[in-house]
Length: 290
Image (cartoon, rainbow, N blue to C red; front, side, top):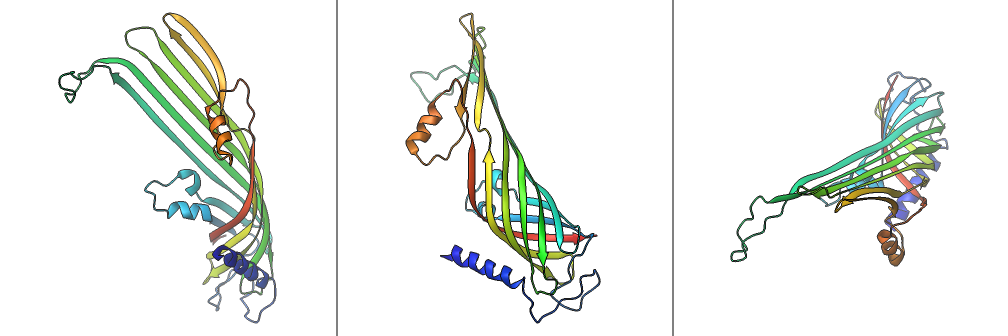
């Protein structure tokens, strides 16, 4: 219910921003204003824009000790006022993480008569594992602003997000006393695409250069491929072997049985794709300059 009230409130504010009200702002020029509500940007101005949606805010202020970088990175945009009421915007969201584990395995065992005795350094094999994930999403769009005489700056806009999602998974293991080994290399790469349609409001804080606001609308985002393709090579008892297979990387099927089955299978060929559509509610802050 609280979410419904939030949406309705934002909608009413946006509607109000497109109608004349009695309180007037200064003319749309970059001179100091006598009104505390602030001046407005005009043609030729730029703005750095930071936007955070509800998922990102929830992640940052969650009770968990570790913040998931995938969902916590905000949208960073550059706005350019081509005219007083037409704004072009371009921005990005990007992250990357890497995890590495490398070690020699102690194969010596504790004494049978005293199982709590520390084992010796009976190194007999090695194990290495590396995981890398990356994500980049770029945004190109525009805003159409209304009514320079309003207390609030209202606008409608559209954005086309596009980018990539990538990952690499390498496991290498073997014995120090033989030629036996196995190396498994998994890779994935997929294009990300979508759309955003929204309306927004801005309130300028005193005289420029700051404004705060919100955007609400609809967002669709798709992935062309979300699976790992693995290559395997190794040797056992002097016999070399190799092969390849694919595994599913989609982790949010509603059908729990289908999810478990897909996670446990190795496919000789596999195609995956995703597309999600959901509501958009984003809070914004912008810094203006010439």
